[in-house]
Length: 312
Image (tube, rainbow, N blue to C red):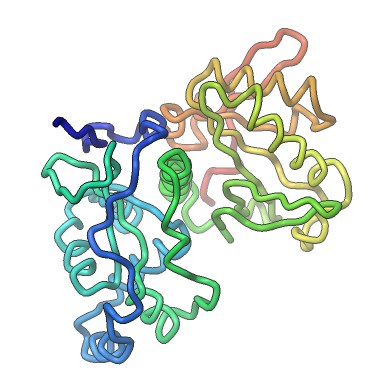
């Protein structure tokens, strides 16, 4: 029987990941599978390096990433880091998985390997990384393939944002937890940019083909409560204006449709929405065409130059 799985040649088009695939992890998560004392000893002896610690922090903050994404974040080299990642998996600092049609153990060479944190990484960060890992559990890594795809798109957005904005980028956080009028609101990501001695906050969502009518509409109605009332002030205390909304869409048509939904169904100002796509966000963020704005008069998108993303 042929078993279908996600292959490396998917590139950064994670929206193509089938929604019914399952995670097949390299190792079962187990608190007894790795010794905290051993991880501390490896770090103390220098066998776990500063670079390893940086990789571990990256996955703690972004949940999932490919070797290509981790390499690009660290030094722009992409997959050359794969060998070291595999060593960290063997030490149980990290774990990895592939996405496949059936839950059967297999490891084809052309499969897309996705990395995540394991208990060894939690121990490493709690002792040396300055991170509060008390709320981290292995179940953080267990998600349906549709949610894995969205997280990978968010990770790709971050990698390209980091490349574009450099030191101007502050406080990127995946899946921040907020509350508005007793409703839980969790954008896919939030971040801040330091621009001309002032700070701007942005929150982001991913919109894929078919989302615009149902799940996206429900989420955007929750975000409306955050963005159009004073609820945002509880979470963005050092600024005097609400965050901008960034939408990462599957393509231009989906972006246009999502913007139209926001315009019709909410009081969110269209001038405070930035749209990009999975292809467009590969461009440096401050260049023309990386982002679009929506014109409600014509129901069309226009190219925008967003200088806020340009590093000082």
